[in-house]
Length: 126
Image (cartoon, rainbow, N blue to C red; front, side):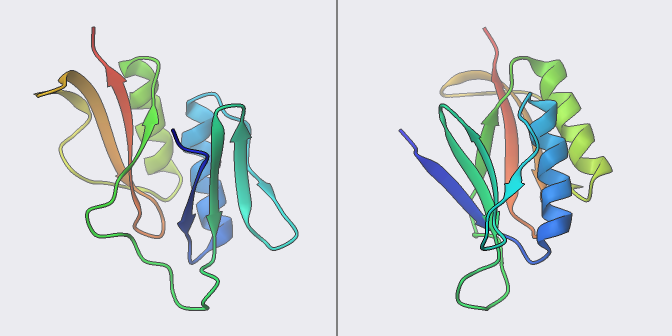
């Protein structure tokens, strides 16, 4: 459904370190810089990228926004969460764990990246 997701970052190097760690925990290669200073993480399913806002204003998190990354299992979601905390992220929401809702049981782990964007690792529990 999605071709790409791009989030704003105030400190590209700090954000790259953070996303290299959390996405690395999910099996992705480190991001690469393009000639405009943006960082891209790519695979055959889509693109995730970070950039300084093109309007020159500070980056800020979207109120009510969350970007979710698929985790293969709860252990991978926990590794993702730990990697984020060790690389400039902050925990938010409840601690990582199972939550039940209208779509069934989900294992969720939430973080805020160095620019305050809210992200999540999600594993659907069978």
